[in-house]
Length: 116
Image (cartoon, rainbow, N blue to C red):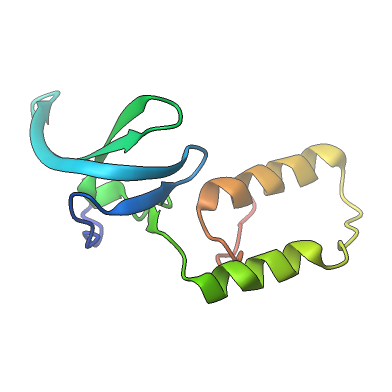
């Protein structure tokens, strides 16, 4: 198992989890799963009445991030208001790329979505 950089999230911090939205870290706990001791963020999503446990060492890899600053949100909204770029790819390829972008957690799309 490779160790990723551990994020600096604390209990009561609000975070964005791709595909689920904004949640609040309730606690950080340790659990033994399949014989491995894991440290987990316990995240509550009030809107969906859902609790999610995310291994702390995988949080950044899956796109979990802190809330964005107002200037970053403004840039993202400006991008959304702009003219759409027409891609000449098959609809299934475009749909796959869009899903990868949504799941990346990157508000401005700075991470490059690679091909498989």
